[in-house]
Every structure is written in structure tokens, then in C-alpha cells.
Length: 382
Image 1 (cartoon, one colour):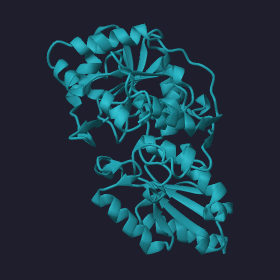
Image 2 (cartoon, rainbow, N blue to C red):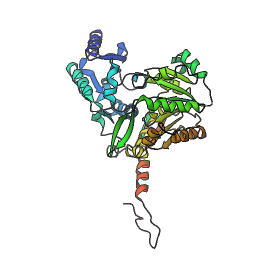
Image 3 (tube, rainbow, N blue to C red):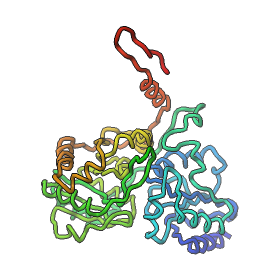
Image 4 (tube, rainbow, N blue to C red):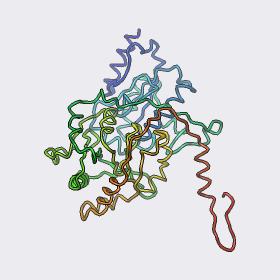
């Protein structure tokens, strides 16, 4: 019977345009009704939240405890997802761009996502979207959900074992100058706040060409990722000895390569979650309004408790966009910051806790205003 179910899963995945990235054939249930599908095509940083917060809760405290969970998500994440029985992803990587620009938190508003759900519902009875669990977290903790238990336990699995990486690529990275070796993902989208809402803005490859060219001029070495989510810049820097290309779709391995450099630099892409998950030194260039409005601090705490390796540089994307076309004023300022803020790797913390009361106290402090004059007013919490 198990073999029959396994064949059904193979056929269903194929008909839905999916591949079974991770599964153990011997663990496939004999009862088809035990199979539950969770579909996730939300934001990347929220995927780590789902992995570290939602899935452990489902496994330990809900009706999913004894179910066979198939997690359908972005390609390349299978080795980073825990507490599920299988991980499926799309065969067609060309649809990634259309899906990603319509992601928001755990949600996805694209037509492609609607088709994915429709196909899965034709083959399985128990299919749920990840957004069903937004009562626990949605751009920040839902404190009402945790009113009886404000202590969150996070258990991570160590990732990015160097033994899984390509020896040829590692040798190329090691040829670069060890004092200024930066990992960059030339992502096609950046995240901004426009008209009070979070949105994705697609940039051109010219932005990355000029930024990387300037970094090289300033005697820096760059390791560039190349996959279905990024621009292919190999034709511009293929003969440059200060640039190394990593062609990789497996994000588990990408984090491994990232850790072979001095630092990961994120330009408005919201991708520092990968470095934080792997405890890799990183610096994020981000708009302050976006960081605060999206509660990125809470997301980062769920991904890693090591704040010493995670630095911020607040700026505006338009400054950088204009700057790379003109005088590199802001770009050069960033390079000086990178040199000045050299971040050292530190201990890896796989088990830690988060006390939600700490967030509530910090929130109270923001509203506990004091004005010095003839009288102190607003000394009470409002």
C-alpha cells in the first residue's frame, strides 16, 4: 500500500508541475487521508519565521501532530525546512519572478499562485495556504495569540556544511583577497514602502553593474550569486580576477558559500535572512521606514539571536539609484562603512528563547514621552 501511495504522490507532483525535493519513501503513510499539504509562496524572511515558529507549533500542539505534511514552496529551500515530511517545489523556475513580486508576508496574490492551489486541490483533499496561520505572526507577533504563554522557544539546525559545497568554487573564492571579500546577491527586486504600503520594485541589471564595478575599483573582491532569482552578470565581469561567480539554486549551499566570505551585503532586498540563518556577518542597506513598519527586528530575532553579526545602514534607495548614475557619493560612503565595521564571526546559537514581554516593554517606552519645561507632562504611559 505504501508503494501505491508513493506512486500516487509521484504522479500528483508531476501533474501539478512539481518535483519532490525532499522525502523518505519508507515514511510515506499507507492512509492517503493522513496527507496534508501546506502551500507557501510568501516572502523569504517570513519563510524562516514559518520554519522556526509555525511548523514546530503545528507539530507539537495541533491536529497536524500525527499528519504527513507536504510543504510546497520555493525551489532550493528543501534542506532548510524542518518539521515536515516532504518538500515540493516548482519544476518551472521561470515562474519565480511572477510569484515573488506578488508575495507579502505568508500570502501571495499572483495568478500563478492561484493556479498552483487549484492544481493541488484537484489531487488532495487537505490543502491549506500558509496565510491560514497569520493569527500567530504577520509582519510581527500577534500578541493576543500568545497571551497565555509569552516565551517562544526557537530550535535551529546547523546548516551549510562545507563538505556539501563544490571544491572548485571554494578554490575560486579562496583566490580572492581575504581582507575584503563580500558576497552579493544581484536580486531583481528590492523592497520599499510606497504610499504607506510594502511593495516590490524591480530594478535593472545596470544598478548592479555600476555598484559592483565601483566596489572593484575600490580594491574589493566580490562573490556573486547566479540563479533564477538574480540577474546574470557573468558577461560583464567574467574576466575580472576580483569577481567569483556561484551558480547555485540550493539556498542551503548558498549560505555555505556566503560564510566563506567576510560579509554579506544586502542592498534593499530583504535578503539578510539567509546570512542571519547561517550566522554569517552581514550588513543591510535598508530604508528606516520599511524596517520599522515591517517589524523586521522581530523577524530577525526569530531567525537568529546573534545581533553582533547583523548590522544596519539606513538610507534611501533613490539616493543609491541616482548616485550610481552620477558621482558614487553614497556608494563610496557605504564602502567606507564596510571597511570600518568589520564584523567578526562568533558563536552559533541553535537553541534560544524569546520573551514577548520585552517587545511590549519597548513599545511602552516609545509612548512614555517626557517634555521638559515648566511642567513634565505625558509622564504616564498613553
